[in-house]
Image (cartoon, one colour):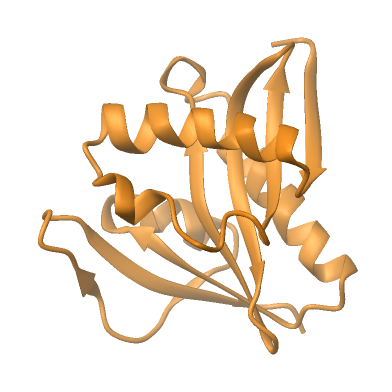
Length: 145
């Protein structure tokens, strides 16, 4: 844990490492259907990746939607939870968006982790999204200004 390195970009290397962690956390651990994790935005998105040596331990995806920026697919390796890596990866994503002059950041949070995002300054808005798989996502936003 002493050798943590944060990378931000959309290179194939960073994307592959982020995908490896998303596969492990969302699909294998949580049972999220693969088509709800991997989509057409993966190649154009910017990935935030926290590495412990060569191992991906936290990730988030950033998508520029024009007026709004979206953070999604935030994941922390199960063995590394409780070490503030979710906060670290989110802060890196938010700092990146702010540096790009982004004014509004949105995300859809799993219902059970809304309080985590609220501590970072996000507020709930809009209608809750319910998937056939049973997952419930809550739209949240953060106003930079």
